[in-house]
Length: 78
Image: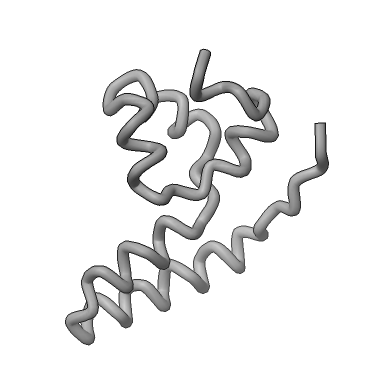
């Protein structure tokens, strides 16, 4: 399995703060895109797959790199 570059907590928080600024400026779509660029924690991705479905994760533009690293690249199709 390929090594995944992880994002530090500081980097994640910086992105979230920038998304808040975009939202405050009225750019809701930009804020959503920015938040979705932060890798979703594997435990949350697993719950979202079970509760919301695979299509929600695939079509939502979520960064699933950490879930793929933990569960394997085919985890969504299993």
